Length: 212
Image 1 (spheres, rainbow, N blue to C red):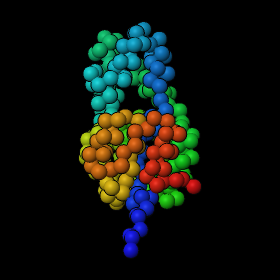
Image 2 (cartoon, rainbow, N blue to C red):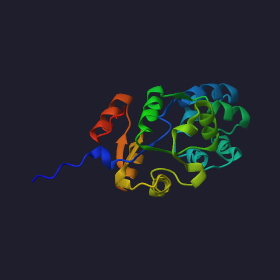
Image 3 (tube, rainbow, N blue to C red):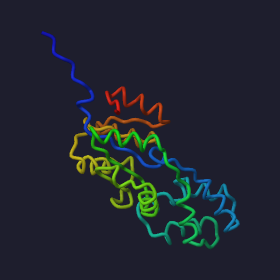
Image 4 (cartoon, one colour):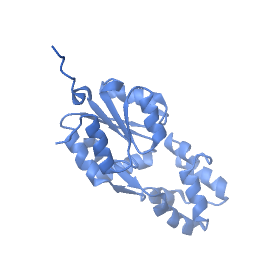
């Protein structure tokens, strides 16, 4: 007698999302253009500081440094004085909602635990969760600035798995950055490299996940 094939869907118990580039889209240039006018510095240099790893800005911000520290790193690079309050506000204007993913998560919550892992500072955390009412979407949330670890470090995935009370093989992780997806896969988590909404739905279907 042949054994029945196991349904892949039954194995998956949790889906963990990245924030920027998945549940919300972002464009640094929205803030950069305005910052450039305020401090009279080249937009490209500001963009490279915000978007790059070489200047240390991203690491300082993501790991919870005070604004005097992360904006201070930019001041050193550009040799200008930065109005921290104004730049904080501009730094929060770069996002817009991925409405289809919001709708999808609400459907997925009926059958799966939903988690969030984000390389994010407290400024964006507070802004996004207030603006888009994100608290109700997730069963577990892990932020780099709180745990002092960033993706793709395996520790940040382990922390979230423990919160959700699931095993790696029972979990899907989705991120728009391939190295973060690979970090999850090394633990045995099903990784999806997010490119667009249509492609993401197809990848979920391959795992037997069909939102209703």
